[in-house]
Length: 117
Length: 154
Image (cartoon, rainbow over all chains, first blue to last red; front, top):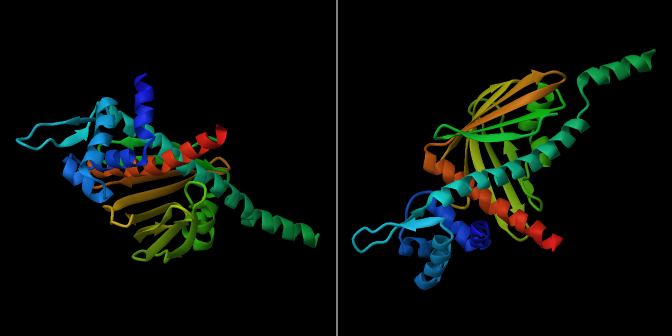
């Protein structure tokens, strides 16, 4: 059930971007709203979903309520690593094909030798 | 052939290893020849690399640009610090998304391993937060691909 909440929370690109921003350090609602060109209530709604999923937490600092990544949000970093791994693997599978298409010099020499015989 | 490994190390490193069924000379060339780089360094499906310029010598610069029909474009720039063909490349790079990300220092080694090559790429970010942000960027792109695939399955 918690996994579903996490999955649902991460399904939205704005919420993923918010997490990416919080991975760089804590931020207030106003600071989070700025780059997204969204109203503060709209951002607050996204923050509530992330908070309910346990991905972020808030701190009380006078009148400020800066948000930061919570334990589950940090754990999600490991999942992100798995996804980055997937993107790299796609690159390297293409590289396998490129390498297969590059004739090794030894083989070329052998073919030439063979042609002479 | 052993597959890709990718893990964090300490506070600031990410280490990637991968075996290739080709000589270190060939793998090194595929990492330094722009005509070859352009064929494989493309990331998730749908991205192309319209600009691939590099000057593969110590102190030489490079610029790689990627484009996607729907997702726009971004680029990286970097400098080669050390080149020891065919075993080692040290370079520094940063992304422009479009805001500039902190420098990523990358050492890539190619070692003969049986008839193939073991590649070890060690990335060093300035601090743990930058590393987290880089992983998060990967997630943003990776999630898109995962959800796109999920949609086609449904």
